[in-house]
Length: 499
Ligand code: NAP
Image (cartoon, rainbow, N blue to C red):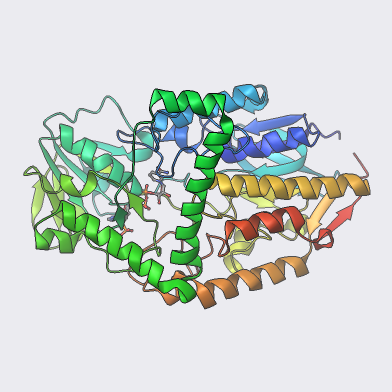
């Protein structure tokens, strides 16, 4: 059997596109990028809810090798991110390799042919030397398992499937969830709803947002002198790095900075909400950083409007006409908005069945052992496989830090393969075990996840065993250094005979 593609990349979001750009730079042009949605952009294609914007400064939330001088704001609206994704796909010739509306159902390593067999919904199978999954961390929407939710007779919208035709004007609207998505959406819903009830289970730490329109003159300067924008990027990245390192990764050593962040958010709330009872209800009882904090200038003031109600009593059930809380109170509504986030640990690691050497099932193995991946990228028993959304892969606050770190890892690994005339790589068990041990120790000994008060945070940073295995507990500088300098003997290399 011949192998059809150099590589199959699953996911046409920024992660998959970064990986595809790097593969092309490394000489692999015969690519297939499979995407379940009907267009590229990942998160920025799927999410279209009102108020959507990036909450990392745009100069930082973009590829460093493809700066965009045209961002309209410091924190660009979602539609600009989607346009940027389209621009990148066009400029780097990725669209020709993309197939949309294509759901991958599984992938199996074929030891005889030494390639991956990738199954697509509908029965087709494609083969590739390398398999890269870039299926995102936040790509499997979570539906709340609230009794009776299916019986609601009005309109139900999840934030990942926003329906522009849903009639909100003057309606009685309820929203479940107060994560980063809800923080952006709630002020917009309040502008249109006649009555808005926000069901909050866990409050979120919210900082003020230094969001400004970028003047045309500055945009022109960014276009003419990219170094100026690069300087802005470096400043933004450094600030985010400082927040991550001091508040989260090195909580043990720099606890006071975490407390400063908490005070900053409290002061923001205090300035915007005068009612002490409402303030108390909106104040988290867990340490800053246990769960993803966010930025907003109009979230808190929305709760001071007469037609907006914060409901903190647990939802007991939903019936045909409304929501009933555990104390028996009912609120009749016309529209139910679910800002209930994503399921990571049950269904997204990995996003489809991946079978490696000797029938090793990645999802089963992760669940029966521990969630782990060498440098957040490769797993023993899975040759020629790069799992880009793996445990311990997310580094820093901007996802582009992670993407570019992984691109560096790819460069080093594929160059080593080329130098050796090899066609198959696999991370050694020993290198993987050492990495896991090192990351686990860092989480346990230094981070807010084990030393802070995270018990009540209900954070998706923690897996079902209570371990914080999503974020890489190191500085991004260290992550980048290791990506471009990991010991080459950490991998085993073999020739690819039989192709
Ligand atoms: P999320 O942070 O997981 O929040 C989900 C919300 O729904 C939480 O408040 C959760 O409450 C609530 N919820 C879930 N199930 C519930 C139930 N059965 N009953 C009551 N409440 C329930 O999801 P998200 O807000 O969509 O944000 C996910 C991530 O997307 C963010 O952390 C961020 O990384 C990213 N994001 C980024 C941007 C950006 O601009 N870059 C914007 C938006 C989102 P509990 O906390 O109590 O579970």
